[in-house]
Length: 245
Ligand SMILES: C[S@@+](CC[C@H](N)C(=O)[O-])C[C@H]1O[C@@H](n2cnc3c(N)ncnc32)[C@H](O)[C@@H]1O
Image (tube, rainbow, N blue to C red; front, side, top):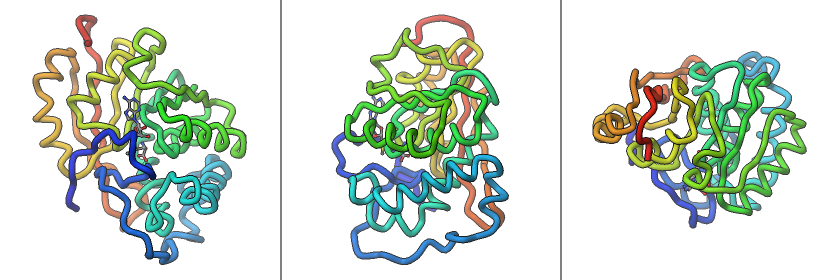
C-alpha cells in the first residue's frame, strides 16, 4: 500500500480520504461495496452495529451529496473507512474522555463513540458544514455520548483534558502531536491512524516527541476482519508535565 503523509485539508470539497491521506478518486466508479451485506459485520461491531449501520447508510445516501465523501468512496466505505476507523478502538480506554480531532465526516469519532458507549466522545472539527453533518449523525444514530465542538484543535488548549485523542488523516505526526498533546492529560494517549509509512513518520517526528515528552511511542499493525489489509496505529503517551506547545 502506498502512503502519502496525511495533511490538513480544510478547504477541500470532500473530506473522507483513506487512512493514508490520499484524496478521493475521480467520479465515475459506482461499483458496489464488496462488504455490503457481509454477515461478519454485525458480529464484528456487536452492540455498536445499529449505530454503525445507520451511520453507513447516511454516508451512502447523503455523504457525496453533502460534499463529505468522494464518489468512489461509497463503494469502499466498509473497508477503507468504517472498519479502518474501528481499528483504533482496541487502543482506547473503555471509559473517560476521548477527543477525535479533525472528525470530518465522523471518522473515526462516530465509530469510536458507537464502540465505546461508556466513554464521553468529543468530535472536534473546524468546518461548519461538517459540524452540521456531525450533529445530524448524532441525532440520527441516537448516540448519547457525543459532543460536537466546532474548533481547531489549537483553540481548545486548556478546554479539554482527554484520556485519549484520536485522529485520522488530519496532519503529519509532528504537527499532529503539537496540536493534540495539549488536549491530553498526563498519562493519556494520542492514537493516530496512519498508512504503512507510519514508522518513518514517527521517526521524522523524533524532536517533537522529545520536546513534548511523549513516551512509549509505538506503531501497531492493526487488523479488523480476516483477509483485509492491516492499518497502522501510532500510539504515544503524554509523559511528565512540561512545555507542550
Ligand atoms: C482529510 S479530513 C479527514 C477527516 C476524517 N478524520 C477522516 O479520516 O475522514 C481532515 C479534517 O481535519 C480538519 N482539520 C484541519 N485542521 C484542523 C485543526 N487544526 N484542528 C482540527 N481539525 C482540523 C479538517 O477540517 C478536515 O475535516
